[in-house]
Image 1: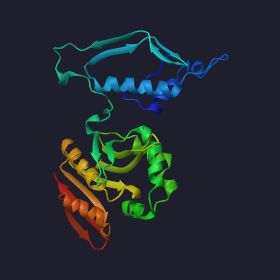
Image 2: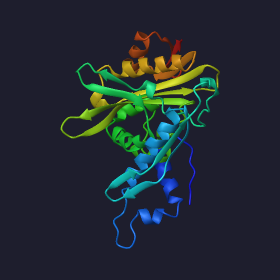
Image 3: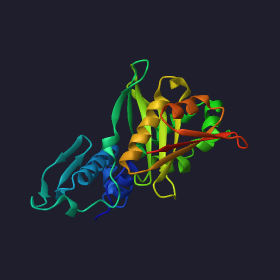
Length: 275
């Protein structure tokens, strides 16, 4: 009874792996027994897969058996084998899927002293992205997408899954989130996206900030962060197309050294940064 998956897992992939096993039925509770906390088991599998990916010096690792009960989980035995110390780092096996880029996680202080965490997006952020889009005004949506995109289209699972489940080699989506005081909940207040184009060494970027968090410097910070990531990813040129009347974003780009060219016939501004 087995299921195979490529690390790093997310909660959806972990759930699918469990559903492929025969023991899945027992985990949900049989013969009057309480079910196992499958959400917690998903998180355990996700964390285990991250360990495998983020520590390439691990040659083999297993937990066997793992006792799963309604009250929690207990590793009764575990085994870890590491590669020989004489092995060169360049010889280590690389993951088929690029791991979560933890090096891009950072803390930032807004103009009003609100602490914001800026980090790459995770598949688990889909519900937060729904909340984020629900708070956007029509004006903000128009300035980002150049037309009025209905909320139901913006929060469709098919669309958000392409944004939250990303291949970090092709694009990096950064979210800015804050903690809501007294609620114990975190919400996304801004999103920045850097996407490689078909042109070698070039990427496009876009930034979107929630209306209730605008004019606090977040647009500038997200743009600056995307430029730094572009440098580390060996991207030579970063471009964006901005509505000419989007004065805030045009100002951000000019202040960060972008070359801005107005396209009169289209009513847009092309911003180019050469790194």
